[in-house]
Image 1 (cartoon, rainbow, N blue to C red):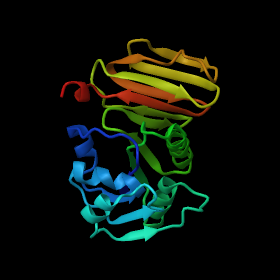
Image 2 (image 1 turned 180 degrees about the vertical axis):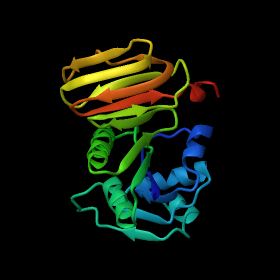
Image 3 (image 1 turned 45 degrees about the vertical axis):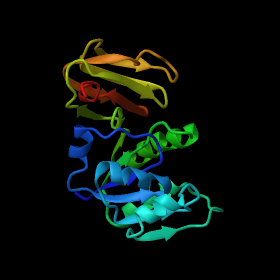
Image 4 (image 1 turned 90 degrees about the vertical axis):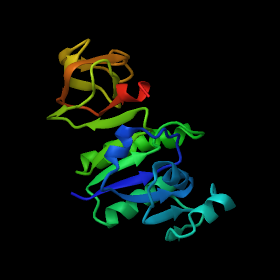
Length: 215
């Protein structure tokens, strides 16, 4: 398995859990996402994008990182360019670091949608800001999670959901239909070993690891 971390421009909090997830992981930075490299103590093998959000300080601090610079008049985001570069290098698992928050809500939404699309195509994805994580839920498969008791989580539907089962949760569900836009699956809590099964539809599990709030 070839795992790549993509450093994106959203907000980030460095945590021990995130540090563990990034061990033995190759790294590509997208535009201003390079600023996370120093915080995380990692050195990307590539820095790419149009560099329209990169100041002289970042250029000087990371001048030794190989770059691939694109025109600002392009039809892809810097994050998508970085993901394509990782896939071209054989990535079959991606950690999208800094995928939430920041100044661009449209980019954050695109990262969620891209993770769903990539997972459906066979590329395992995790989205993280350090303080929250997102995991695509694939229909027809059960997914288990290692979150501690008390961890807050939501299942975020991107379509109508059918056959949603939650076990190891404060409010479990069994073979439930969830309409797109419903708040039924927001703000749940882990109780034991969390497992999710989805028969059809598109959804993400968004979690707030307990370990972050204990720091």
